[in-house]
Amino acid sequence: MPGASSLSSLFSMGMGIVAIFSVIFLFYTNNFLIKRRKNELGLYSVLGMEKKHIGKILLYETIMITIISLVLGISVGTLLGKLLFRVLLNILAFTTVVDFVFSWEFVSVTCMFYIPIFILLLLNNIFQVGRSDPAMLLQGSKQGEREPKASWVLTLIGVASLGAGYKIALDIVSPLQALSAFFIAVILVIIGTYALFISGSITVLKLLKKKKKFYYKPKNFIAVSGMIYRMKQNAAGLASICILSTMVLVTVTTTVSLYVGTDAMLESRFPVDISVGVEKKATADQLAAKAIALAKRHHVRITKLMQFYSVPVSVLKEGNSYQMLQMDTPVNKETYEKINSLYLIPLEDVNRTESKNFELKDNEILFYTVPESTSEKEIEMGGIHFHVKQQLNTLEIAQVIDTDIVGGSCYAVVKDRQIIRQILTGYQMPEYERLNNNLMLNLDGDYQNRLAFAKDFVNSRPENEAVQYESRDMQKDEWNIMYGGFLYIGIFLGSLFLMATVLIIYYKQISEGYEDRRRFEIMQQVGMDKREVRKTISKQILMVFFLPLLTAGIHLCFAFNILSKLLAIFNLVDTALIIWCMLITSLIFAGVYIIIYSLTARTYYRIVE
Image (tube, rainbow, N blue to C red; front, side):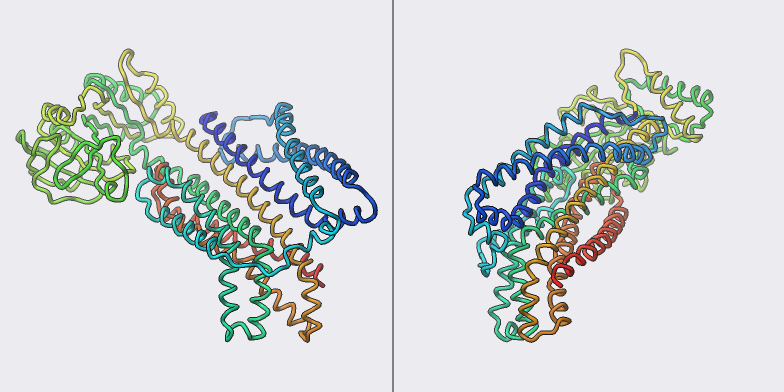
């Protein structure tokens, strides 16, 4: 399969993410369940059972749960694996028949990974029971009823972390910066989210409570008081829902954007169907003749054939001076605007490709810049001063070699190759180190014929000479495999995070139901009718459970800049496409979130009523 190594690496990365997530989520689920069971375990102690007996019960339960989980997980996983394997092949548009293979090796890997996790869960449960007396166990599920305290320190940490994460994301100006800054911004946003949900929400509610004119009104009094307790009980879970929701949105948005934009990325990365770089002009001439002969054999038509010499140099523009970009130059907002790719091209090649009759002296150049023109009349390159004889409005060569994603591009047309050698000497960059004789081809014909032509043409490379080939058609299958794999992994992980979100919301609804059942009764006893009580509690529930969705949307908006820069690394620079993918993904996720909330809310109302 083309791109098999990339796909394998993606799946290995995905397996690692699933493994880490499994540990975190199993411990979260276990802690929720053991808290709900502390009454039961305390009752066992009151009835005369010793802690070692309770420990045996937990041991037997864990053994049974481990066996059932592994047997059902592997069985269902195998059945779903066959289905998802078919889905994967369809996404990749891979038509060759490939069978799904059941692997005992990965059964053993799964068992060796999950059995230690269940052992750790057992030890954690035994430790919690062992350090508690029966009275504490009986009250275990009711702990946390004291009014929470606001922590200004934690709130300020949350604001600072979230602000710093947002600032990093907004200040990114280059794809290279995005690579190094992305994970720092993610960690800061996660810290800020948890801190603000856990402490910031309590701080805001406490401030509202101090406003007597606002607080001592029936609706506000009940809402604020109820929300204070709800946020204490649910803050960490709601922060987890927010982070998971953000992960779903970011993962699916980026992978869908890459998959939908594959053709646009191919066009951007490969401006022509086939490009070749060789050391000698004679070799380029031979390959051009070979291409014409192969085109007839494979029934394709060459619509464009260009030969020219060009030398690319990464430079830093300081005024009218183009200085060579050093490896240790920091890429920040200030330097990014100055970075350019400078292409040195001899006059004879431009005259031939453009059908012009330009004339230049040794100290004169023609100049062309992208994305915007410049009015400079004097330019320094490699320590040599040149007079700009003419600013070009178009340059056909630029259309076939400009694939840079960092900074701008500029093209200096000089009198001859001898001038280029002088400039390179000033840059301390010998000419022979690069494959500067270029051959560019555009083809017209059936895709399979073009692909066969490209493969035959690549195999015709001369021996004992360095040649660099790039074929858009040969890369297309590999890119489809790679970005289809990205989409599959994105949807898979997005679904995993969504399932975790569903379960957390479900646990929260159960927890809220048991917490509110007594409050529901008290409110009716003090004079509120059933409809008013339900309306009051419903508002609080809606606020609590839709706050993570709103916050996730804000996170995604601030992440747009850094995500667009990361996608630019893959040559996806279509901002409109990324925005549409982000909006559609967000709307679909919001719809699913509302459905999940509606379904789990029924469980809540059944418990309360």
